[in-house]
Image (cartoon, rainbow, N blue to C red):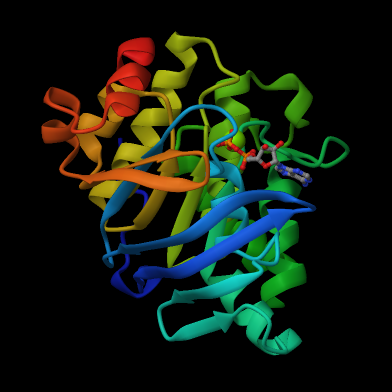
Length: 258
Ligand code: ADP
Ligand code: MG
């Protein structure tokens, strides 16, 4: 498979730092003083039981949710909870972070080509010709150029997720967040998506990946973070933690998913 990122100027990867982040929904404290650092070009896998706050954490990183306390830094942009966030700072941060969801979230009424081109036109102000050219280049790289004129509904789940990844990449993000990108897919189809993610990691993209795919976490991630009840209960080398978790709750979680 060709490299997803070939030109050096496409990849200005950035680190992500989360510092003392807290978030409640009503009286439910969902993230309790979370701090973590993702080095530029590294991959962090985020695991933990359902309801532990993984999705909320990712959503706080690109400010789909407003944290109550703490800061999020991507590259040279820092957003502080509570402080008056200017639209400009918000946009600056969002532009640097691409996100891929479990449920693809493609625009059903647009062709695959328009799905990938339209956000570039809207968000980056690229011309239609320029955006579509870039879309075709990226679709080619994930083996989906022949789907360009079809609607997403005609594509398999694995193809739709690869299109969603390409759509995010087309905006030249400096970091990518993945929220259980293969959970809605049959295992044999999930493999195609994981292959694209592995390639992206090899290209040097900074990534935070919420996943239950322990083989991916073991083989691709540089760092493993285990969450439970809004806390980081354990983090470190993925292989070391999988071989010998220090926390009983990690052990229980791993024995359920491995
Ligand atoms: P995970 O991704 O680890 O399964 P989530 O971040 O989705 O966990 O959820 C953590 C907790 O926050 C859960 O108790 C969930 O019900 C709650 N929660 C998440 N999003 C919202 C929301 N928009 N409004 C209220 N509660 C929410
Ligand atoms: Mg979740």
